[in-house]
Structures are given as C-alpha cells and as structure tokens.
Amino acid sequence: MEIEIATIGGYEEVGRQMTAIRAGDDIVVFDMGLNLSKVLIHDNIQTEAMHSLDLIDMGAIPDDRVMSELEGDVQAIVPTHGHLDHIGAISKLAHRYDAPVVGTPFTIELVKEEVKDEQKFDVENDLVRMQPGGTMPIGDHCELEFVNVTHSIIDAINPVLHTPEGSIVYGLDKRMDHTPVIGDPIDMKRFREIGREDNGVLCYIEDCTNANKKGRTPSEAVARRHLKDVMTSVEDYDGGILATTFSSHIARVSSIVEFAKDIGREPILLGRSMEQYSGTADRIGAVDLPDDLGMFGHRNSVDRAFQRIMDEGKENFLPVVTGHQGEPRAMLTRMARGETPYDLEDGDKVIFSARVIPEPTNEGQRYQAEQLLGMQGARIYDDVHVSGHLRQEGHYEMLDALQPQHLIPAHQDMSGFSGYVNLAQNQGYTMGRDIHVTSNGNTIQIVDS
Image 1 (cartoon, helix red, strand yellow):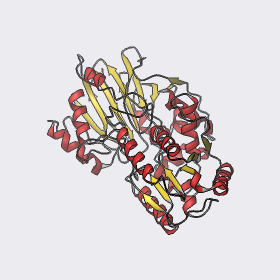
Image 2 (cartoon, one colour):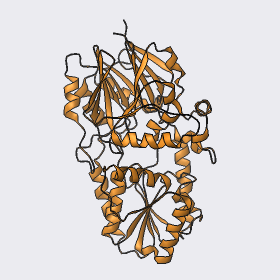
Image 3 (cartoon, rainbow, N blue to C red):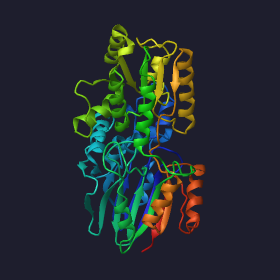
Image 4 (cartoon, rainbow, N blue to C red):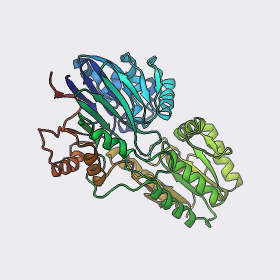
C-alpha cells in the first residue's frame, strides 16, 4: 500500500498545524490550526468574518491546496486537542472535505464553538466524539486509534493510523506526565505495545517545541505546588492580587481557583476565552468548579465585575484574567493601560502562571504588557508554570517505546528542529534516510506501491 504524508502547516513555525496521511485511497487529516501571531499583529481583525484565502495569504491558516495532489478521499479530520493552533482553521477549511471531524469530547465542544462563531462558511461536517483508547475504521484496510496523552489542556490525544504497512503516530502535542492534576496519565504502555506490534511504527511525526532543552518536563503537579507556594506567600497582602494563565489550561485555572479560596479571596474568571474554556469544561463535567464561581466574557459584564471588586475591596477578590502573552485586547493588557474600572496600585501582585510563547510577536507584546504593569506599580511573579511539551529525555523515551522506522520533526522552524535531529542521530537515525526534515506544502512518499 502506498503511504504518503503531506506536511501542510506547522513545519516552519509554531502554529497552523495540519498534516495529511494517505494510505492507499484513504486520507486522514490531522489538525487544522491557526497561527495566532499572524492575526495579533493586525489591529481589531476578526477572523470569523474573513475568507479562508485571505487568511492563507496572511500565513494565519494552512495553505491546503497541496491536498489536490493526493489521490484519495478524506475519511476523517482529526484534531489532537482544543488549542487554536490545532483547531482554529477547522471553521475555514473543513467544509471543503466530505468527512467528519473526529475528536475527544472536550475538543469537539470547542470545535462546535468555533463553527458557531464562523460568519463566512457553512461548516456542516459531522462532529464525532471518540474517547482516548477508542478506535474507528478508516476505509477497508486501516484503523484510527486515540492514545491518551497529557498536555496543557485536557482531553489531548495522539492519534495513530494503523495501516498494513505499519502504524503512523502523530505525536503533537504532549508532555510525559504521570501525575496530572486532571485526567489520566500518559498511556506509555499503549505506545510500547504499538511499537512492538508485527509491523511496528512506520513513521513518527513529533512535536519539537522543547527538543533543544535538556532533561525532562516536570509534571503539572509541580506547577501546582509552585503556584500554591506563591499564592500562600501573598496571603497577608491587603491589596490587589490577580493571576493570568492560558484560558485553555483547565487544570491550572482550577488550581488558581482553589488556592484563591484557601487564602480567603473570591476568584472570578474574566475574559471571553476564560469564560469559554472553563464554562465548557464545567458544563460537560470535565472539571468540578465551584457552583458560585463567577465567569464573565463580555466587555460590559467584565467591567461590572471589576467595578464590584473596587466597590467591595480588592483585598477580597482574586481576578483570573486573560492576557498572559500581552495580547493587546486581553483583560490584563486593558488593566495595564488603565482601561478598566480596576485600579492597579503600588505593590499589587500579578501572577503569570504561563511562559511567553517563544515567538517574536508574543515576546514583544508580553514585554510591553509587563512594562505597562510596572509603570502602574504592579509587582510581577513570573513563570509559575511548567511546559506542555516534551524535553529531550521525553523524546528519548518515546523513541525507545515506538522504535519508528521514519521520523518527521514538526511544530517548529528549522532552528527548532535541530535539537530533535541531534538526539535522533544519537539513536542511530540519519538525515535524508529516515529523518525527514521538511517544510509546509511538501509531500513525503514513505512507501511506494
């Protein structure tokens, strides 16, 4: 059976992930993501109202025209998890394919939100929920499997396409967390089983975000302990304390909410995406948040919440806000510019439970936000966080478990691939033979007919 892999997006940057696997006449698409930094550099842009071709020209979503070169029919569109760099283009591209979108329950709920907000295209693809550990047939000869992984969002999986020529494991995005705060640990037992099946792993496509960093990525339990230590240390402060983190990081948000109550403050979630992600997770029972937790996304309701905080005393509340990357329209940036009823004062504490995404736009915006906060007198607690991506020792462990014949580095640019190429070479792989460093819009023939 011919096996061909189209590396459509996410092979020159962090963002707009999209990969297609053709096995004979059947095609599976993994991820359809957005490169948010290409959107943020424009003022007041609304992607919901934009045409896909304009977003492709901006470099914001994958250029999927290479799909016309694949001879077969798309059987499934499979987002690995609910981050926008993996689902943010589904509302723009999925309608081109007569195929269901198959994902875990939380991921599908987030896809539904994206589709509901879409203003340009009618996206009528079936939305199919499949649990980690589940399988479904792809055509007559292949099978799709979801393997549970841990990441900085709940309900993340690595999909595996089982073909007669061997398995193709799509390894975006994960960390090796054996003590997650929410959900099950990474299923290393299943990865080892897949690596030792009769035909083994034909190809492994791997997220290289932290491949240049030594050691292993700590568990979310480590971030939780760090967060508790920081928040307990400011328990006696009688002014404003606020926190910011990834809205999609449900485990982190739930920890902040818990520790806010422990130090005698009422947590309130503020910002559209904060309300969307936590509200969705709570509604489907993926997290147990307090019944009285306030969540506000619309500008007027957010400002009313800020006014209530000021009226009743900042020392009684802990706002959890969007804006950890310094996004211009996010809550924290508006607060830093003095555009909300919340008055930042000398000594107020701002806890960044997130690292800046290593990309120039984000780094510049985050720097500007921190400077504005400093000008208001705020004291910053930085980097109360652990990454959602494997470091080098995790990569070695995955290679040992899967023992793949071929490797394709992804989710980075060329400099970001270098660490992964080096460690793969240490394991006996060779550039040009079984390590395939590629770029967006290419196809790689793994098996000829």
